[in-house]
Length: 178
Image (cartoon, rainbow, N blue to C red; front, side, top):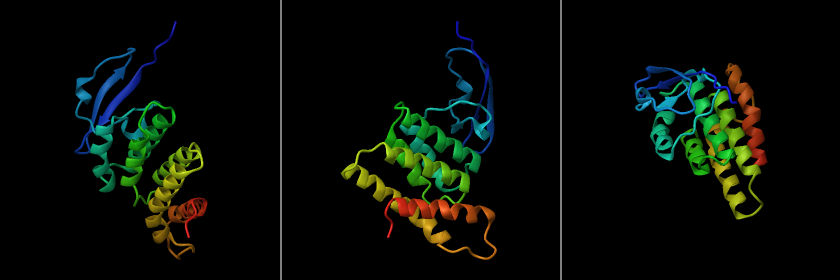
């Protein structure tokens, strides 16, 4: 028999507050208290993935771009969406839509999730026009951070920018940026 583990479930609301729904300890259930939540698993406190619908992703994209979702939750959202898409359980377009909304992301951990997810996705594509289009998208996605970080270390820059630069440069080279 399968053992069910209790999982703490909470949601991040659009106003930045958190709604705790308690422990999820059944094989399936509907939690009405989380119906209005913008994102589940705030602070990445639970060890589970969340499969978001395309409508939910579209609702989140504006919030991602304006920075109202904390970095840890942006990371979790990107990580969840790419994991679900990689498993064949979610829409790849949703992952790319999410990445597009994070084009100007400057947080190293969040950008690492975006670039890692995109790398996985592109690695699965066969050579040809679809792969070329995906690599062109990756080059476009990288441009703001490549321009912001440049090729050379800048005196007084943050530790995280110094760590992010080689990641961005590596990806730019990988995807054929001139």
